[in-house]
Image (cartoon, rainbow, N blue to C red):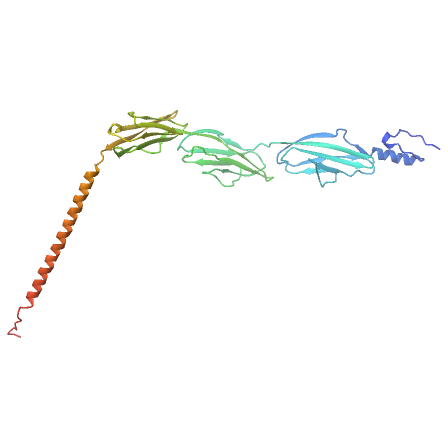
Length: 343
């Protein structure tokens, strides 16, 4: 007797049978690869540093065996779920449920969203004058912050408990300070935030006023530079001459004088100016005449002759005194000894 089927089997299950019970088993095997969810692709978003679990389910008889691949790499999990810890990049994972009739797959597109740092700076932007004090608070209201602190070349702090930690400098003497506040979360991850600090002051010269004495005919250089923010416009005020030249290198201006003469003597003024103020520096240049070499030679000769005469005089003077002392001692030995009557 040929049995009548309630539902015709799909083409992939066209198998002959003589018993209704066996055909029902065949139908059950054909249905084994049906997933519970019809959508075979799934897009998920997760914050960086968090954990996420992917689940894939299929029904049938016998129960399917699952396999996972992520970015082309086979995973060790063979259950219907895959746990991804500390998500740090976009990942594509595929779940496969194979059976004797074929495979059912489901693909997960995991998007790692940048995680915001739960820190607030007060103020987050500040303008401060060079040499003035500065104070910035770093605070948090998040409950998963284990500790926080400041990292900086100066004024840094240790690891402190939330909710507030302060960066404080009594005298800011750095043009580009780079402090950063960090937070360590309970899951071990860490994030940082940095304030925007603009430092300014009027130009300040590296060298003060001075007076220079040089010999006529020598070569002389006068340099001028200043510390400031924003950078200063530097210029020299002086009486120009054919043997003088001004050069600029970065924030420094230099006057070069070749074969200096009396015409180059005088006051040289360096002016440094920016939006915050203006400052000046004075250099007094004094020219001294060179002493002729002949005069120097004569003076050295006179000095040498005088020194020789002095040494000869001292020698003979000591010699004469020595002979006089010897004569006195010799005459003293000729004096007769007298015996006292009382003796």
